[in-house]
Image (cartoon, rainbow, N blue to C red; front, side):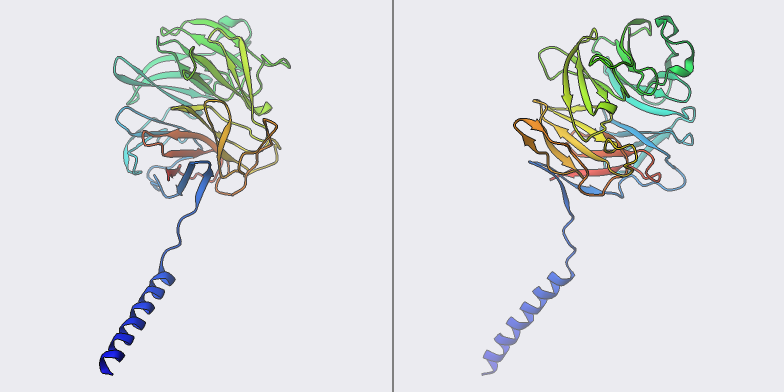
Length: 340
């Protein structure tokens, strides 16, 4: 009888411990996204405090060492360099009050940065640690700019031969092509009603996923990306209804973009992140509703979960984790999303 009571007591105790363990277990973190492109969010990644403040967190890239570089228009430290765990590696930059666009390019095994400044109306090429190599002023030689204030560059992209393009996304909406020496070669786009024109050409990237390299350019007001040839001929419109997209970011076969907000200009805090496959089909929305197609047409997208205010850029690291920078969002540091 004593042995039976002991065994019974042990079973009850064990069951109680299991119940207690379940009661006190931490709830599993939510997963965001769809169709195999799903992530867990870390809002504490990269938080540094008063010594290294941020203002608007505009754009992020990963360098050849694996570090994540953040560009902010906080002149106490325009560039914050992190490792992927969120630990600060270094910081630099005090001269970019309108820091907006950040592009990384490798030449002869060395990383270089292109930075656009919307306040100073200039574009800069620097070394990875901030040495200034080239400054591009407003392109008076085009004949379409009467003053520097009409040039408000938001983004750059670089060809393999060193030629680079500048998107005047907050200004006159032209796309300028420069040689590696900083000499203007060509320009196209500009404001207008035709499909070849642009309105809020916020971002630009060289897309090498097809047989021939092309340019993907944001037309944010019209909720789309437009594909152009390298010499500026319109090839395709990728419609993204419901999404005021920022710059296109390509990693592998996928295209990633922060959606600043819904098309309603008063729709504050309605942003999310969208992911497209190489066939231009939306496969996942982080913080957004599941993408739906009706007879092959993408239906209007919208925020579904309030995890962002104004997402402005996405950086994809070598492990396919994401880092999302936000504009006008309470000076928050970037969020990290770990692929699951």
